[in-house]
Length: 184
Figure 1: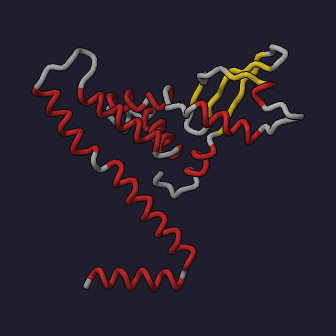
Figure 2: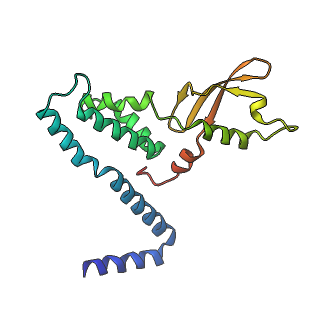
Figure 3: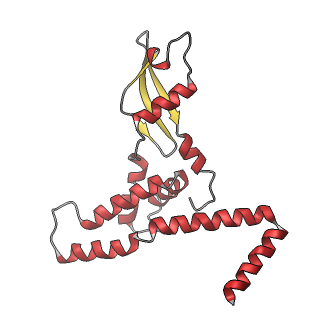
């Protein structure tokens, strides 16, 4: 009977304030998505911690470190809001354990770069061919970015005349994910 009551209240709220109901449903959906992504990590933390206590692993790298690698990869794929929250948390040793902060600091320095193919596609969209010359005939990019953040990457490029330039590229997919509700 409670489920029916909640459903009736949700329908009444949606009829009364449709825009707020739409936002509430989007927020609920994103909350469920985040729970689906991160909830399985909690039991794995316990398993990794237990394995580290039982066995002696290679010095310098533990099962819990591997778990942190997975958490940080999932955070980077969850969008720029999650990455920014992780970067902020890394600067707060007064709120979080020092070990957590040191692991989260990796979000400051080593965010995952997207493929060069994606960069080439976005460059084609930003700089259409002029006089039959595509952008890569006017500008050569180094294959690896010199910097990668949660919404942009920076490459070293060379103009046809040999002049070195820095090329910043915004990640459209990350920008569109940043317009999601606050949970990520």
